Image (cartoon, rainbow, N blue to C red; front, side, top):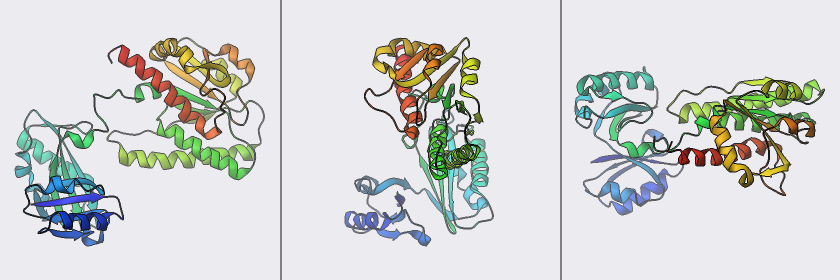
Length: 349
């Protein structure tokens, strides 16, 4: 039996040494072809996988079904054997990780092998929540093929309520940070990263009065940098398509005039407001039925008091505490999600 063991980068040697102690007669190859975070294990021990998983440095253990040359035609030849592990009423997905230089891409492998398996099994492809995952781990001139189950995808399961149900209808109205150019850019990066991380409907940068153009420019540049860095991570991490959050600039008072309409829920965060626990029952229902949830967040100074009259809620997120500018978006969205999730569970959704 052969196993491909995955670890954090830099932890492969430690894991490999512990595996040697646990599986005395095993052949161990630490960092095959020089690639970190990997250990190849060959052993006759029937309890090998169980023993390897007892090592904390080990993150995943893939049982290798086939080891073939790293060529698409050779990988496709394994489809018949792989298909025996997938029934017609199950869904599957192919996930390829390529290390080294080849004349094909990971997507080429996914498409070619996936098409052949579908032809053999008549099973449906499901890229979000597959019953079976075919792992193609390519290391230099070798390809290792494994089959995993649902447990590999517990991060995204239909049983968990989807936070995007709320965040996709949330627009954040953020007052810009002003002052030192470097500070403006740093705060912008953190705000851009946070807005993209939650995949909100829109980020509106809303000054309340005339502002220095160069300070605003550095703030917006920071937002773009922060958003892009988070977007690239999301593209790698999520099995669904990711869109960049739209970013616009609008006068604060005009925003509240425009958004003060039917089915729009306006929320202002301010220490003068009510606590979440005081309003959560009604707030949960309003979040559920709202077409758009518009949240106003201050920066260095709060949202002007005159706007409070137009808000449906003025909320104090943490009594006797003032959040830093860059913490506003995560704090308010996590608080709203807790209220919204409780409402979803009440409704059995």
